[in-house]
Every structure is written in C-alpha cells, then in structure tokens.
Image (cartoon, rainbow, N blue to C red; front, side, top):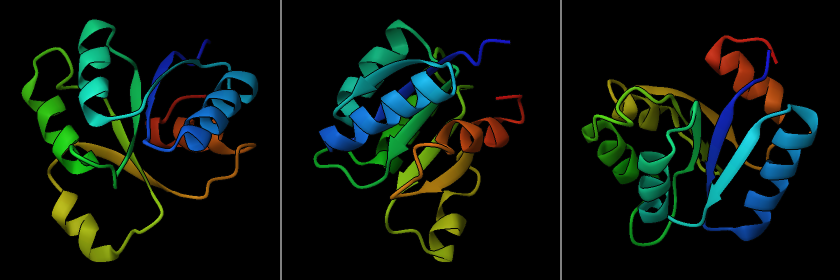
Length: 126
C-alpha cells in the first residue's frame, strides 16, 4: 500500500528538506512542503494531504493557529495533523487536546525512523 501524501510545514528550510527526503526515500510518501502556516493552508485546501506535519513555532501564523484554521475549513477539517516541535511540555498536550491532533514528533527527529513514526501515529503500515 502506498503511504499517501504528506504536507510538511516548517519555517526552517533544512528541516523541510530532511523531512521530505526521509519521507519520500525511506517511507515512499508523496511530499509537499510549505514554509509557513499561510502557505500550508493554501496548499492543503488545493490538494488535501493524507497527513500534515506542522511545526509549532513559526513566525506570523504558528502551528496551533494554523491547526485552528485547518479545522475550520471543511476541505481540511478531517486531515490528521502531527505537530513537529523542539519544545514540548505535558502542559501543551492539555492545551492541544480536543484539537484533533494526531500526535507530536519531537525535533530533532531521526530521518531513518520518521516515516515509521508517522505511520504509527496514523495506525497504518509504513
């Protein structure tokens, strides 16, 4: 089974590139990338992905604000979202409960296991 389409959203170009290579080469995903929350909203609406990996801390529109907007759009409302973050605390998990968040992956992530981590969060084979 082909894993599907993932949208990777991060303001750090290096992280976008590493995630894209890891997900494509190791996991077989079709990958689209976005450097900002605003661009993610546009791309996700035009070509809804199977999952969105979303950086939490971004300028202008951060990850949690982007998630709220994704959930408000009927086209992207049901798309699973996984936060990518270097700074995660248990208190944030409480803040994000009820948002439809599929999970959290800590940065830095291991490129060799990223596809498996995403697959486990989505409960589908890698």
